[in-house]
Length: 283
Image 1 (spheres, rainbow, N blue to C red):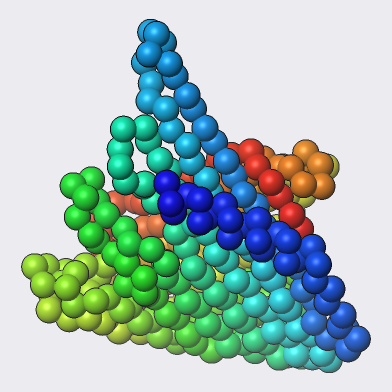
Image 2 (cartoon, rainbow, N blue to C red):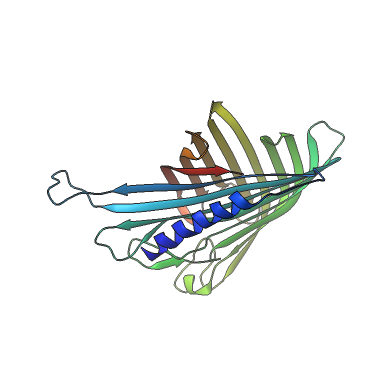
């Protein structure tokens, strides 16, 4: 419950700060925009309720912030994503983590002689902030463990800020995991006894955002990675979709869907889906 209260206090503090903050960009080189949302859900049952059920309360905070630079034939697009969610079930002393993401994407490009094409360099960082446990309440992750880094030169096709594809035929990938997660076996693709894994391969990433209907925006992000050094046919897939359905300026319904396939981490498809109605603030 303390973590839930801290989550709510932090969220409303950020809203207050942003409401008082005024950003002036006289150079017009930077385009900055973002969206914060707090999704809340609660279920309650009395003792006489025959249908069954357990009272619970949950909250999810999401921050999606873009800060893009453009000057002449140079573009530099950056996206920061932070998400954290907790759930508290009646009768259970501990809160359960329902979402935890920390991600930074950076893509630099210099326009070529071909329309909409750029020479590019990209960087991607992914990790989480809090401890993760399995069904047996055993710790399987914590802050910066695992942490994923990708970097490489390539070619960018960019129609506008809403549609782009980046191709990096020579991309490096680094996975960091604390050694106590690999004492008994491999973890997140890192071999037993190690704390890192280095890969070299090809990366393709795509971004597509559009308005399906009035007040309904759908953002899609896809990242594919093939490791030349180990089973290149096993392509890592990370697809994320974020749907925002605005009710008014401050209320919205949100759907977040993420699908991951990483053959080295687990030979199965990982799926995460969150839906909720909550407070929404664009800036």
